[in-house]
Amino acid sequence: MNEQTGVRPFADIDFSALNWRIGTDRYTSPEIQDLERETIWSKVWQIVGRADELPDSGDWKLYTLFDQSYVIVRGRDGVLRGFVNACRHRGNILCTEKKGHAGRFTCPYHLWTYGLDGKLIAVARPDLVGDIDKGDHGLVEVPVEAFAGFIFLTPNKDTKPLAEFLGEEVMERLAAYRLDEMTPVGMDVREALDCNWKVVIDAFSEGYHIIGVHPELLSVIDLEAGNSRHGFFGDHGMAVSPFEVKQTAECGLDAQVEGIRNLPGTFPTVAEVLPRFEELVNAYRDPSSAISFPEGVTVRTLLQQATRETLTGKGLDVSALTDDQMSDNQGWFLFPNFFMTIRAGEATTIMAYPHPGGDPNKCVWHVTAYMWLPPAVRTQYRAEPIEVTEPNSYPYFLALQQDYEQMPRQQKGLRNSGLGHMSLIREELSIARFHTVLDRYLARQSA
Image: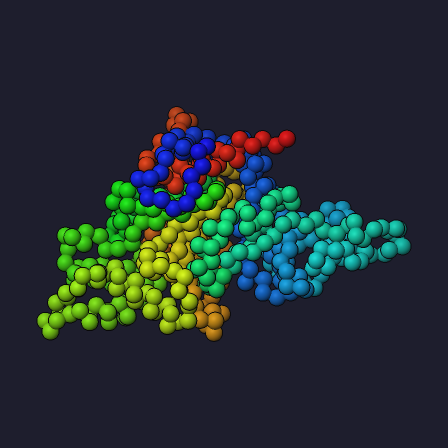
């Protein structure tokens, strides 16, 4: 593969280096899912939670991947560690709940006890056990690191460090948003879906489907061919299209202002910016309320100014963010399964995992909306995690509900044996890039 890196306009990308024809068996085949398990899921860093889920020493949570189970715990030294969820004696599961708090882990089978650092500290009836090297019988540790408030785990003890996996540029760009200071607000939901995990990643990697699935977004998202910018950073990527009221040449300033007023219907957090936005607009109205902007001032620039001033007033340091980042949603993809839209002060993350039951036609998604809030009110507004067990029972916001309904329909089509492949178009560049990276991993057979 001819690797492409950095941020570049659509017109500067070498499309010949990417995979544009994707076999449908990639979404339906148990054999390919087994290969993904071997070459991807058992090898790479993956997000397993948020660091603030485990604020205190002894707080722990489980992460389940297929039939594999891991415990992530905050130690007495404040360090996050991960362990295989199995006693070193006879392999009994240590933790059966999804999360909890403990001063130590005791196996319920024979009462072997481990410290929060994984070390074996006691066995029941030492006279029956005999001589045993406790240093040789600690829990099996797996690498765990944190970045941007997220906990990353990999089952591969020989993997490269997280910083090397993500890359310096990814970490620098995302750190500027202060994600580690954001709080889940309004939505923190896990639900099983009737589609392959890659259907979810594909759906959120392109804007072409807005035309058919989210027509109400056409007024504020720029779909003009070639206007997007793309960042390629190793296995990861970013795409952004300008976020603004469309057809500014064909509609008056009042119509453009009204378009901004309507944004909270789709982007709820814009609501807190609107009071300052209205003040800035009103400064350019004459006695008859007509709007007239001088050169260099637009509805977009006033939205950016209002966003920067509002967030700064709340206490968020946005000095490292550009004006474009005040308004434009950047779509970030971190291989293998993390998608995030982010703009100053807010983010929505979508993670898709293979279904623990092993059916490649199913997955589990985890959707969370984040906002930057002053520390004093973060606990007050923090969303409680929800595990949805009844399909169609959770009220997602409009655009997300539309995707929720669309993705299982696509999976049904992909299961047709007569359809051998999907044919991507240029607007689906990010999907092509994802599958090109996926190709490289799938080609790595285990020795």
